[in-house]
Length: 609
Picture 1: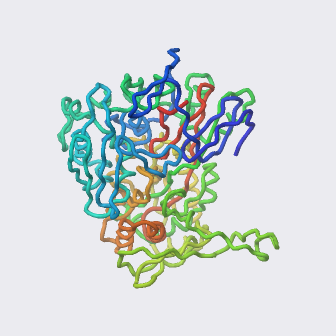
Picture 2 (picture 1 turned 120 degrees about the horizontal axis):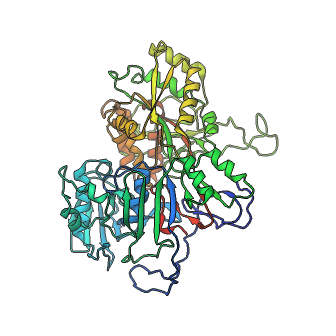
Picture 3 (picture 1 turned 120 degrees about the vertical axis):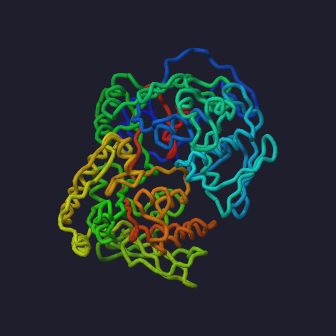
């Protein structure tokens, strides 16, 4: 939706937002072309520069809700941490600014073998860390082995990949099976390449004995466009331009990122205290849009984030959330359309994989057939909203699953040729609320009105949306089913710790992609990173296990169908309930003309103009 556009903003592309600087504007965009190289920029690998003005400018000040607890790139795996460490550390691969679903070379050119088991990389010439030390294969191997040795989320997504050195600039990563997501995985800021000598000098090693985290939270040892100038705990991080950076020169030599709640962000933006706010709520964005004298620009884009509910399968923690009948009552008792209105700009989620990524159900759904009768407009070709036209995709290979979920809105997994599962994606994609079915499932569970605590991070908004507002709406809707939800907010650090350790019975969270590939969402499968948080172990559902492996092993054109089949089964059998795909909003003052958004690191600080 575009409001009062005084002068045209740049055309936008997925993940890169162009912002006008005149009167207050709200622009809904999908993506923006790369900004042209400014005067004084250095073209990577050439060393050629153009003369730039030396006029000093005040630091760019960014307001954000901090969810990181460290600036050690390998240990952080949070929204604000990824944004900051992306500016400090280069990665072997990166994401195309024009289309962040595409992986492009970063520090290294790469070649992936046809079967996806071998990735050969060669570092660009002339790469140096911020202290002038040359970047070599040894630094790459140390960085990746350290990530595996720390046993955190980074280790979980890189898995058992092994590295073989060829020479100081060339190396090969090998996987035991097909690993087509590996180039995308390496673009995550958690795999920012470290100066191994500097890290080892401050307690860095391979394994749990590593003690370099404290040093890396105050000092950067990367080759990115910025270095840490100072870091004041959880309140502020100051960055300054890396004088040895050979890429495009940042428009702002200094950046200050402050930890501010959304209310403070709006206040500071209005007063000129900050230049960019990352967490305004839909209502705050609407309010500032209506101010006639405002010079603030608000731009929104559909995010790649997923809002979902998790029901813990550990019966000793909560017997009700562990009961599949209770989970069915929750799924059928929620009105996702109504929830999307609570979070303005959101769309109901059809499955775990957001629209825009391979395998998303929205992207596989058939176009509704024209109708001349029923609920459509007669003779106009307007589709009937209740259309159930279906599309059968090619069956994935390499699975022995023969069970099928029952037919539901959105589709079903049926048995195809040779006993292989075939996803049938139908319209409507999102199941309509069915109170009668929800109450029937609740009766089968034996539930009798016991309080069910709903846990969430009270101080961590989801794409600017107050989590409490969503929690209250979920409580209200489930009350009509007969489920007594008891709100259980907690500070983010406390809530996350409980959830990640499997101690939350019923919880509300969001998931932003660690890398733009559907394989990232297999984290929700039994025994995987998110599945384990719901104490859902591998071997407890053979159908899901088989579909998970079929999706992981799928190749080329078969991937979309394999991941669709997996999602449709997860919608019926998993302890996760997809709710919404929200929008992202950025609000900027007069000094900012372009904000390059990204689904993995939120904003590319070095490319802000």
